[in-house]
Length: 461
Image (cartoon, rainbow, N blue to C red; front, side):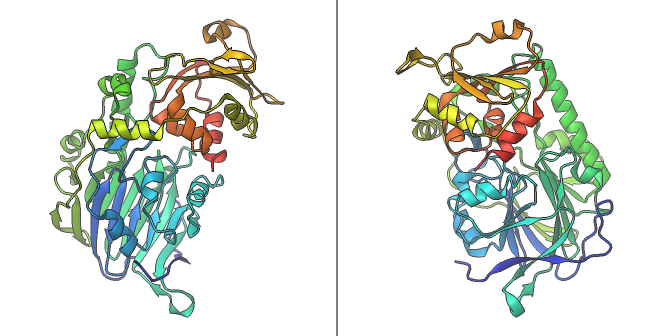
């Protein structure tokens, strides 16, 4: 067990600005970067060891599983050696409650200082108290010790915000002459202001991490939209790579998939990009692509890649094991009164009416429940206009859409077994959207950004 205190010290660097990110590059440049799973990387230097975006085992979004099996003894390595863990945002494939259960409670977390505290509060809910919310574009230096015995590392880092205003971030750090930048899932990171040079630039690459368009009743030509979105994803990533012009590009944060039988439609229709799609394009430039399917440990000395290797992993999850795990963790179905309490206490007001229907795993009607009013389905009409009202009542959304209403209307059909832990534990509602557990209709056909932001970043534990 690590017995040395880890702290994050703010450092004044006059050359560093948002428009021109700059970090010192002093000290030893030897660093080992190991791909653990999805967006989870382990960085090891002589003076500092840290990990990013922990999702290594078990499911995310209620039913997704990592493509890569967990590394052997990963929890012992992290708990014994890690000085801190960086988490980019609160989506379940980056802040995963199952993985975090194996992390020691005195671990230091470095997280973005979002106004919503959308990363801080879920960590606190899991019992972590050593959390540093880092201001954007401010330079920090990880250190060991306390008081007059603080020993600075040669790591300098800063957190950058997603350019689209979402609660998302990227990390930029240096270790001597080695430098690393990841935009993870961010769009237009730091408003497209990048450092002059990076040894490694990392980004999500696969696309498909959204229920749009496959889960939306408002889209008819779903296959065409999927192809268009993939083209846009690839184009945006390649543009960022060409702007940064790193020595190496690391496609990551795309190694996950839904595996359950109930998601057969998604698996058959949701196309994903692979690292090969980038190697063929980026390979024609001066940038080399690091493919973690071939090697997952990379040793650098500054800008030079010295060696690569593979790490030992546990046996991968089978589909049968995943099905059993899902059923074990999704036995209960939330009561109607609990759904009403959830929305009544949300503090959300908007010119919006949500028609919520909790369904079976295949989005069929759920067996009606019995209470003092007799048989009633798990259907709810939630009127967010002031004052809010939530009633459990049957409805036909096609008929509701035909009515002339001044309020926007959003129809959410959500699997009841997946919705139950999210609503009961006040987890981000986006987990259900990204996990393909919704079928959505809306009038007008707009995103309702304010609604999703509130129930993903504000109204969470």
